[in-house]
Amino acid sequence: MSVETDIRPGEVTVEPPARFDGGVYFIGAIRTPWTARKDCPKRGDAENGPVCRLEVAELWWPALGGIEAQETLQILYWMDWARRDIVRQSPRSDGKTRGTFSLRSPVRPNPIASSVVRLVGVEKGVVLVRGLDCLDGTPLIDIKPVYCDHSG
Image (cartoon, rainbow, N blue to C red; front, side, top):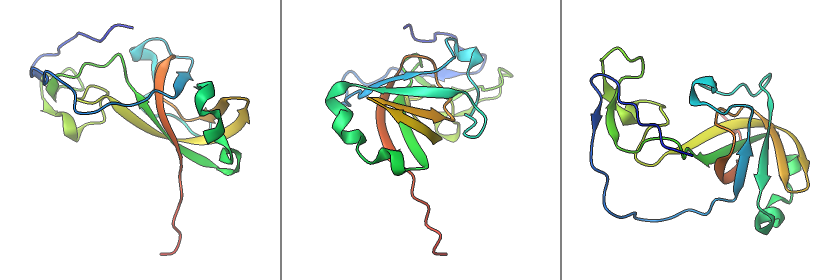
């Protein structure tokens, strides 16, 4: 995959640091129907969106134990096609810019995304969900249950 290289009018870039502060383990890959950024929904539809597959690497299969009891999950993933150097962006290509941290854009210093999805089912090493908004083949970072506190 190649990184998006388009700069819109008014956008500002910086030179990223020479080294990384930490690392992550990709625990698998996400399979979705979208192969181009322009085709991805802005937010996934957890009720009516397409069923997507979280294909977990075999090493991590034991970590899936009990996941079938969850209704909703938080999915963390790495937007590997995204630029990492734009600090002011023009989301509507209108030349009016805002700081990256005030946007949900995939273009950010650490292209980590999070989606809350509805669990559809679990197969051997695969979690089926609705509600994702990423490209096919996106690296999977983590899967977490979503707990709702209804105590007040």
